Image (cartoon, rainbow, N blue to C red; front, side, top):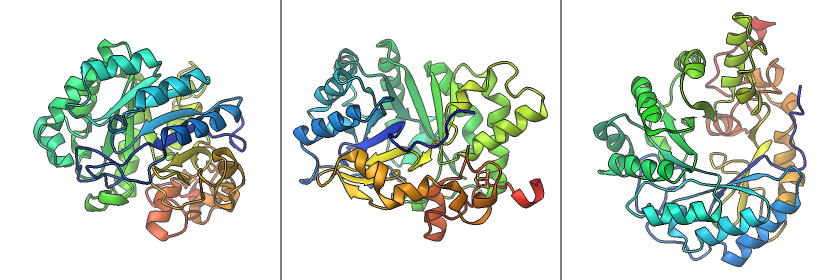
Length: 355
Ligand code: SF4
């Protein structure tokens, strides 16, 4: 079993370069605004943090520039190029707006971007635009996706999973395949930011959805991952073990690579003003990159260190046989109970019954 504790460096750094965005999606985590804020990190500060991240490896973390809309930063291409020059993998998660032009995508390609992601929360304009609350967004997403794929950049599609989108997931999967995406990442709603206006699945519904994903993942022409639903790993292990297939045909590598990674353990979030949190959905600030090195905050802040001790988690997650590979969504535990060490209420697993 590979090492499941990421003590020295995060595997992924989600970096909200700006909260500015021309969209105003109904469930935006960042509660994005039209204009850039005065306290955003400067280009020079961003470059210093990139140097810190590159110096923390090996292995070096993978940086995902997100927002808001990172295209709102005129230095985005420069920052991608700088990070890539330091040996970092850098991905970009832009908003689907008319600013995602052919030239913008080509410039990111030349800068060495590893991948780009777009959000798709419905299989039709009515469904997608209805969920996001922005008319025309579905069309911009399809055009942007085509530009990314045509540029030869791996495309990831991010989809919200909530009571509103769950009935449409099968159709969305077909669109993801048609777009030529290489990865489908399903974000199981954590009610933070504007996301409080949407309705999460129940634990039972979530289990059904995860089992459906596990059953279909091998047949789709893209990789399936989840965000804030690490118990997908438990479901994958259980379903593969039940079929006598775990480790038998090499198909477990994709999910196994994510083992252990969760908010604060392998994941770090940097907000536009430099605040560091365990994830964008867990709004507890452990420090600011203006005051301390990003990697020092990740390594030594008591919040991050406690999130790397699954044996200290409370409720079912603390006694679960899957706590090392899964550990539950720390963000959802916090949103539900005010305790980031609490149990993830979206999980239907009962360790007392399993043992
Ligand atoms: S009880 Fe917690 S650690 Fe166990 S599978 Fe569910 S979410 Fe994961």
